[in-house]
Length: 397
Image (cartoon, rainbow, N blue to C red):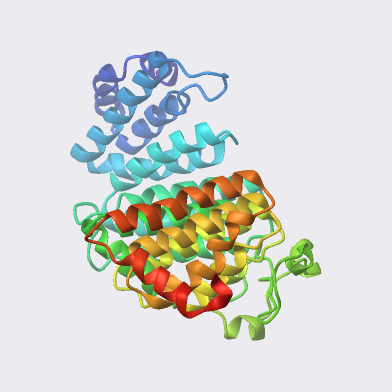
């Protein structure tokens, strides 16, 4: 009877505090009372994920429920012990649809930060274990959740000696070798978003340092669900589709052997993902690699520039356009770097003669921005530097 009262009162979250307090004083089991309350809130926190469209009323009710849960967690220590069950239930019941995954991941990330410091670590460990679930939808959601948690890192909600952010980032990067192409692409997209955030503001310097540290870390031992990293010929031209990796073990979902992983790190995996058999994965890897190159105080990556240059000749239209935009972004961030200037001229400039009209138009826009606007801008020498390189090397004319 008490649980039914909770479900009815869930339509008015403000009254749940009184209901819960009455239940606690009557029976003396605080944690049990909050478990009942939170499970009554589950359908509300999903904000109507079983319907095709979400109404403003459902979103407002979900916001009220979330505010109530966070408030109770801040004033009652016993409430935090029940948050773990609520988070796990939300993770395992989320709908396999991008709109609902994003909304639930925002809710779960806020609930995680309502936990005490000694509870966040075990909760993140469970999320890492959850990322190895057999269901693709669960693995994709764990990546959305990892991205949300890392995006919201701040001194207010994370202690300096906390190790879970690095573990979570390592988990996200390890999923770039998942057997499922959709999971690999999602992991690369989330990592690219994190790297872009680290580049944008000085307040995310901790995130930038953490990314650079994890990228140089050796790959962990074999993990279920990881596919073998594809190899790409280093001296071969990637013009034809035959150079897109189609290793049988990747397609079959094989695992990397310890000897193969011994010389690998996450940065090398990012480079190799640009040769993935799926164009969506290659496109996401190109953007991720671009954001890594432009990280603050990041040494010029000659290998990374070479990889991006090759992708400008990719058989896939979307990958070529993404690679051209990535190379241009690197050029604008590092306009004085001679190696970047030369790589841009050798890879992007020839795309004005691409076989696809859309690539030609996009390249012409970039070329106009670099040369015409650069010449008119008296504060920039980029256009003149590029013209000097073209004048010195006849093959670039």
